[in-house]
Length: 629
Image (cartoon, rainbow, N blue to C red; front, side):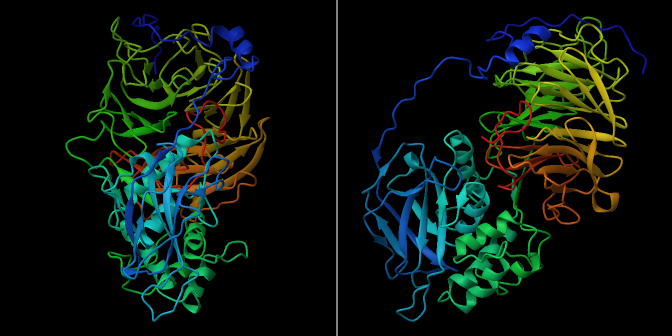
């Protein structure tokens, strides 16, 4: 490329906040202030309110047969930790199903708040066998959602399909004994997880998928039905020998589950374990159809969004993904000159996306602490001189373009990637000049007119921020660390990196595209581990670290997802990766939300795929290394 003169004339705009980064000195001051993103002030929370809940009616079915004498609990999810703190709102009253499986809740319960997440659990009972049979291993569940949304006309079916849908969607919040809870700081992640459960299943009918599933979205309903049929073999029994194959296949670390809900939870949390044994634990031609005719690649569950006509959110060769504090998914599109946004349940915020005059060949996107989206445009269109040297665009949380034709200051030159820091820094990987650019969160330059490390970052393609506010760049042959004041350190490790992420311990993880490998560097740049994926054919691009420190990579050529244990780089996914049952096509970007959902962009089909409850949740937006919400 022939470098042209930079254009520093950006369209003017006003921001509803002051920059948290006014040069390197301000960066350091903010980093040491201890005030955090919310500032040093105090907030006052209103006390929770209670409201009497309406009468509810439902039925419990086991394999389509009524379950009589089952104990019914209406739980409010807890807020004292994941899998902790749920309480039965019906206690001390006793509710049970009648001879036809029907139960009635007469309204003698109170919602702790309208937004409290609630769910039904049915335990024990007779699944249609000669009396007085009782199945103590029968535990079924249905995730309902906001307590305030319940009405007297709400009808509820609790069966194996609602149970496995709940286990997948709430996998990161569900503990043994049917206890659902989140931390007090992750109510949004929990609420979104309940909403996703209702994409998978209709709790009014007990069948898949749910009525709220967006137009064009595709679920793996046959896999869901298959696991429900496997549970049904145990449910429609006395809880004895008929349950042994299921409980044996769902045994983790030597501990076997004792009921059907815990068995389902073990399976969905360990989707690569005992795949064949789980599949063979059920009888063929089960009660829920259609079902799988052969065992799956794994027991992950996906929903793919975007297959609607004529357009779906503006997806047009989607690449990088970012997730905001509400759990909305933002997408950089290489084509189309639009930014896409989807709700946590896959509903587009705009049918055609948010257009931008500065968008062109957009590769990367991040969300800053104010909910603004920043997009790296490899090419650009300048209103001043029609230069095409690339730019960075900024959009408000409502999709309004704030940066006009885009920022071109601070040495920005054919940028491929962008990252945001908790103290207001916006880092840019400049492929064209092999350098790094640093902006404030109002788009002003920190790194001068030529950026940092000119020619020291060969063909840089990705960037991530560590806990010390340094930026790590993936470059040809390795990685480069750049400090906020422009210090540069280079490390050799790789062949052709295309993605980079930092884990909570400060280790650097690189998706080495050309080597089909995942490489781990220590915080001082030495190679700790190198893992080749599937005989070198997967070509990983997007990479992310979850709240437990596990590493996830999108295999662009392998059409799959790899998972590594961050502590020792052991591969946890199957040999060819997770997701071969899902419609992945050239998965490019990868991001994790506060519900534990894993999101991938499919560049070849203009879709997004959500792997439900697969990863440990992280706080969003990502502003440095991942932290648990």
